[in-house]
Image (cartoon, rainbow, N blue to C red; front, side):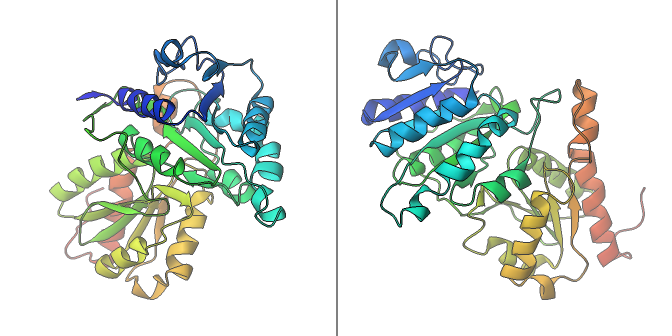
Length: 336
């Protein structure tokens, strides 16, 4: 068992060692090894040209990666927090996301943007503007791993391919304990493949990223109340669930709850549309679908600010039990 960040240290060390085209550029990635130490010691090992510190200028950080990728290199562009990606959004949307399409495949820039977000404390470190990204970055893979093991597998997959991608790590997860995989350099996570991370029969709970941990905690509490929920981790938001895992789960359970880090009507709307229309799960529901999202305001500083504005275990337990009770009130009596 190690801090989750150590899995990324091993992953990036292997990537840099096996492919001389790979380099990292961003704020504090070199001498410090990143503010969360996921590049700790790698500049000393691989050199300053492979891990280069920049000033605070997200647009030109991405611009460096875009130009280098068009010339055959494989950059990791480090944006220190997801909130700060907004400073580079125009370049990511107009240039990076459209390049392959508008050149009819004649040019490509397989930039991997690495960032982290969702949860910590304060207004500028807790952003989850997923609907903004989904609406702006068509053409860029949007990966939302639930832990650092999944993130490492996604990085390996992305560097086997030629598509630009955005990987949003869980900011509060770097010091949570995970088991170090023996095959960090070989493991691959398919892009667009949702995963059932807990089976159940009473309700399908669909989520991603940091909310997976809270969903699993809620599942344990709900089991004590007689509600067995099936938890689906989407893993990527674009592409979204290419194998129809959500629809298959809803067919088994007959109920759906979407838990989302974004504001009301954000990524949850994207997920619901895909489940109900694209995967045609509407007719399989025995009760209306429901959502648990962040509140409609920014997260203030402090742990209580995070608790009251982001989905937590208590929110999920109450919402899931309400759905189960609506479906079968005789089996699930009112307890709140």
